[in-house]
Image 1 (cartoon, rainbow, N blue to C red):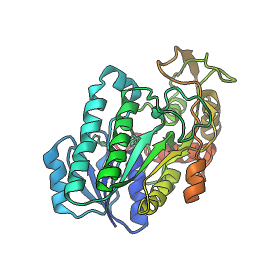
Image 2 (cartoon, rainbow, N blue to C red; image 1 turned 45 degrees about the vertical axis):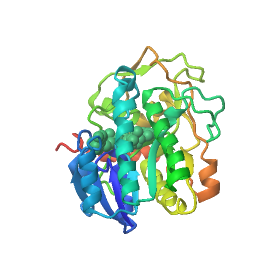
Image 3 (spheres, helix red, strand yellow; image 1 turned 135 degrees about the vertical axis):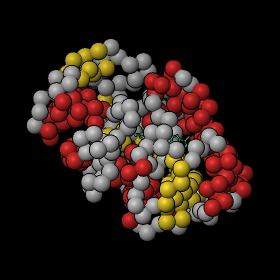
Amino acid sequence: MRILVTGGAGYVGSHIVEALVAAKHKVVVFDDLSMGHRQAVHPRAEFFKGDLRKKADVAKVFKKYKFDAVFHFAARSLVGQSMRDPMLYLGDNVVSAVNLFEEMIKNEVGKFILSSTANLFGDPTKIPISEKEAITPGSPYGESKNIIERELFWLDKTVGMKYACLRYFNAAGASLSGRIGEDHRRETHLIPCLISAALENKKFIVNGNDYKTPDGTCIRDYVHVSDLARAHLLALKAIGLKSRIYNLGSGKGYSIIEVIRTVETETGKKINFGFGPRRAGDPDKLIASSARIKRELGWKPKYSLTEIVETAYKWHLSHPKGYAK
Ligand SMILES: NC(=O)c1ccc[n+]([C@@H]2O[C@H](COP(=O)([O-])OP(=O)(O)OC[C@H]3O[C@@H](n4cnc5c(N)ncnc54)[C@H](O)[C@@H]3O)[C@@H](O)[C@H]2O)c1
């Protein structure tokens, strides 16, 4: 297939592009490089620089190529930023998806895969969280994904667009190829922040230690990007038959302190950490139930937290300044 991958120069997108290329698909990466890296784009993928918020840029890429499917990773995804500047999310994230949908309908492209999020579940009633859990977005970021999921529901009903919403919990780790890894411009993700803290002997502040968990720190579910990549390939095959929604996680939760200890073991360095106040809106525990995708598509994650940290650490050692080296 020829697949348009928006945000394919970013962290998760570049890993899925690597898997699509390995599976012999033709890939066109569309990215404005506002947060991604040109070096992260696979050498066998074509690169198209453009901004999804601009209808003309989106129209141009659809004019140049005939696509069979669209994988949509390009978005802003910082919960805190979305609380301060909601229209970057309720505006830009939504408009970007709408511009894609319009061109897809015009050009009869019928398959769409969305990077959705655990932030749909701001207040889960049951752990592990299944797809039946009520949607209570934790922020304008989560709400922007919810709006896009709802648009997809109606596009399936009205124009027959088939889609998969893949709600990742915490994507983590780096490609086993060693070529790509996690390098966000403003890193907020736990594992790369802890690796930097360990190697550079920087103090790490844990946001809150009064959660209702055994050690008081938040419990989260980490899933390796290569496991996510496999889920995307399976979803692409399956949506030929019907649209799908899946929660994607490892099904295991680790507290911040447990992740700190894992990073210490892998790096052989002690992390100097202390406790700060809670972050507004952070639930005690977020753990995915991935029973549905296991049952329907046979997906289950292969990589443990130790392997996630190991691959992330290896990439960090070979790219100490990320892609800027
Ligand atoms: N990383 C995670 O743990 C996680 C968890 C849940 C969901 N997600 C979702 O997965 C997707 C990818 O996340 P990521 O961590 O790889 O983010 P990222 O910032 O590394 O990648 C996003 C990419 O999109 C590009 N982009 C942003 N706005 C654009 C625009 N208007 N036009 C064109 N390109 C644009 C950026 O340059 C970047 O390359 C996001 O949609 C995010 O909401 C990520």
